[in-house]
Length: 376
Image (cartoon, rainbow, N blue to C red; front, side, top):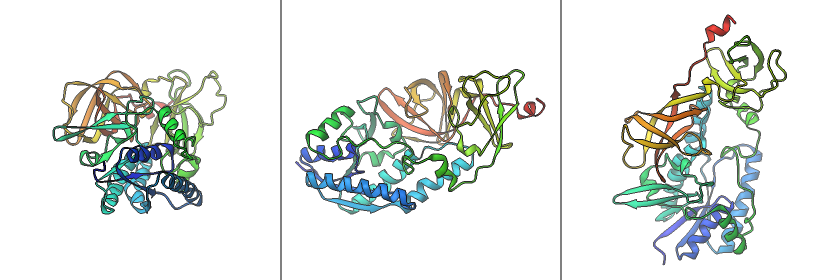
């Protein structure tokens, strides 16, 4: 039985297609909406056009209307400008979190309501649960696909008007449901990469908008090689903490053949610090400070133990909340965390419940002394 119109954000992929299918099968009044969020370069438009045709084919097959809307202007203002500003400041942003907060559960939600929708739905692997007058965000039941991390900055009011039909499904079951229903996208590969970049070369894309400043690549390992210049990078914007590939370092005299890792970036001297120790002290931290925290309901209690993720593909890590106010949150982890990266998000969990997130601003990882390196 229909309980008001539901508009599903349909991307042309298997997840959003099955989300629409499940809602239709449950008797809801369902419509789809395809969002154009990026439209400057020809390759992006081509991919968007192909995805739209896939969404249109699915909508026609399951018998629902499909709208289309261009949110590219909103995307550039609400997501992309933050993305560029963060990279210029030496951080590594997570635009997928911002895309959900600013576009899918804001601009899209408002547009859907203007079209007469009571609620929206997406193909995210997550769940919500009303508890009293609050709306909880919960992990999806498929641990390997849970996407609550990306939804942790979405306002509680928006979550209350949203449905996640795949939250109780495993990915394998989603594909099987699509196959049995004859959906043409049942075996379409999942999209990867940054939301608006897709499969394209990231460094090449970033270089179209920002000019990286070359600088020295220096050894961070203690010993006779400390501070030695072993190469030159094209710009700190192209590198992130923990990175192993793409450093362009061949054999280094006095070092073994082990791989090199980015362990720190010094903006003042444009220095990229590298080490052959995957757990170099400069990469490890026990305390993480987040700024502008967003909580879904009440904030976590200071002094209490929770779990937290510092990146999407990470198991929840036990931690204690040392400080929590409207401006900052400080997390103390039971075990050292590798490559906690400013610009990414620390997402806090209480069991399966996602409490919210804060952008990582600083850690207690030791800072490599540039002065010491100058004399090395």
